[in-house]
Length: 97
Image (cartoon, rainbow, N blue to C red; front, side, top):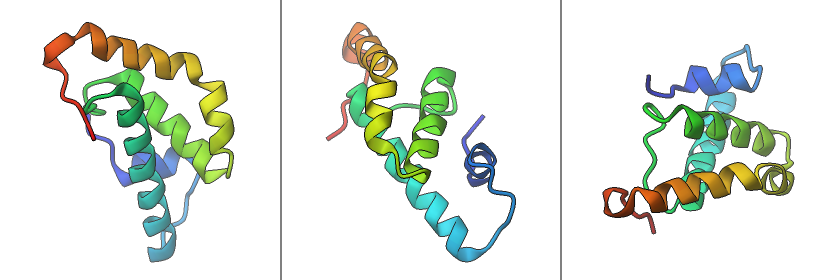
């Protein structure tokens, strides 16, 4: 299942919809995707990888709450696990820049 704007808004407990809010949530979502992919060291398919998708939602929640620095501390083990999983995949994982 692909991640949608409505999924991210639901995770952030945002029940209203307006252009400014939707643009802000999309920016948070894209930033979180880049953070998770960079930590993984590869392109991540959030539709297929439930673990990475949950990390994406958690990262969005921390960014939305202005607590991103704490995310890196609180989720260090999970981020490392995602990175190591990519290394185990060897040449099958795409790298990101």
